[in-house]
Length: 145
Image 1 (cartoon, rainbow, N blue to C red):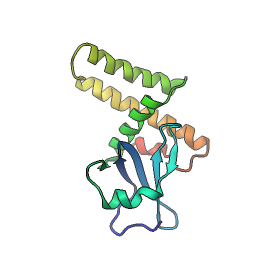
Image 2 (cartoon, helix red, strand yellow):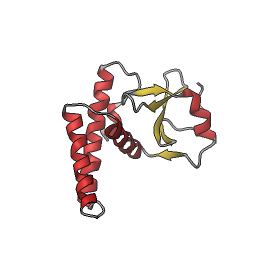
Image 3 (cartoon, rainbow, N blue to C red):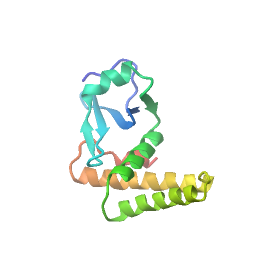
Image 4 (cartoon, rainbow, N blue to C red):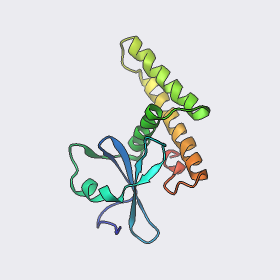
């Protein structure tokens, strides 16, 4: 798909609570990728680009790169299960959130910072695994900044 004039890529969105990224292609166009909650990988989403770009509001909103990373990892942790270091870190985040809930309080600033850092790390780890498996949309560098 050709790039819309004035669109700065990459761009990140929440589309009905699902993370979507629009990235440039080598040919000067754009590609769209939506998180799969079945696999944690990326599915082509070119069919929703016009709706994202021209009908924003309500269930479609722009995200910063960090918001995109945090949303992606929150959903991966919620919908995926498994073993290994990534899932151990997902369990750590869940334990922090559950402890605050059990105590009837909001997360402390230090807990929020810890969760944010863990999610950046799990994003990089997950994206590296996706890249090794051949997922063309995997981008571990997104959370490294």
